[in-house]
Length: 471
Image 1 (cartoon, rainbow, N blue to C red):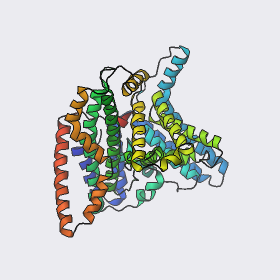
Image 2: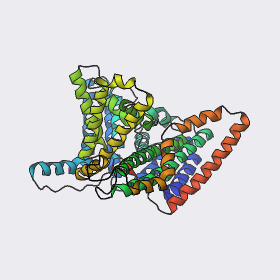
Image 3: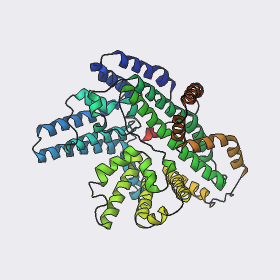
């Protein structure tokens, strides 16, 4: 079950909210837990056991760390046990076949891959449970003594399958005491709707154009069309993933939780460093706090700093998927961030902001071409098309046709990828009272019309993928 589906929008979510608001406060967590387990079991009836096992392991190790509060050696032992079990579980289900296939390719062996299905959201909930254990060992959070409360944190359906990666410290107090208010419900509903519209009306339609371009025969797409396709995938991925984060944050507000922001207009960035401060913030900060800084961060020699960067970006790429293109994508950013740090960063900062922005966008769009093709042969063919090395023309009639038919959508997507909405909100605040009332009324009508259009798309069962299922 995905958020942008008829069963979720018209049955699951309304029923959950009705029961959640109807019951006394002391049992709200149990209602949320029950719906979360049903939500996960809907698509993963077998692998729900895996999530229950992971939560039980980290809950138990947490209680043991509390029991041996003054014995650092034992506390560290339980931390290591938690990390090893989590990483082993993640590695087995996500990377076992990748290791087998790589071994076969290197040695000529013919070992049979296991063919295991990837449990939905495993990369997200294992990182969440690990963050709890690490923060508990560091004495940055208090141990959770109620297993069902802890399981509610791990399995909470708004952020379970696509993030953001919510740390226990973020929601610890709200798991026990939170305010359920009408204002929060309204704000959460509007945020959820914004994400839904981004997903269905923009990401899906831009993605459909990308799918048309990516399957064109090598050499048949002009250079301009190939770059248009790369831009379309970038926009699709951004609007798809940020939309799910919007919907998660919105549902969290409906339920009384305040999840942290996961995107801050990353395509508005003026450098690669700036991009990664804005894109998938919860993942970037996770690797920063639990890998980069413990390795020494940048407060070490140049050689060790380069090592730290390599380790973090190798793992960042590998986190996204069990294929060499993801590793290459991670190292691509590791190299570029290193070059910005040590080679051209100061020069870049002196350039006009437009030039810096074009530089960042070009790097991001090109990088997502590496990201999207897990077949290295297909990646090579598409890269050749990008630079006219596949016998393709600079421009073609198909490019003009795509621009003519998708121009309004593409322009709208590009504009909404920039902070236009916050700018308009600020302008509305500056209006006189009557003007604000009119703007609010117009906005509400717009929300209703957009929801009707979104529903029509979903009823017609149009192109509606969920890109982060494989992560």
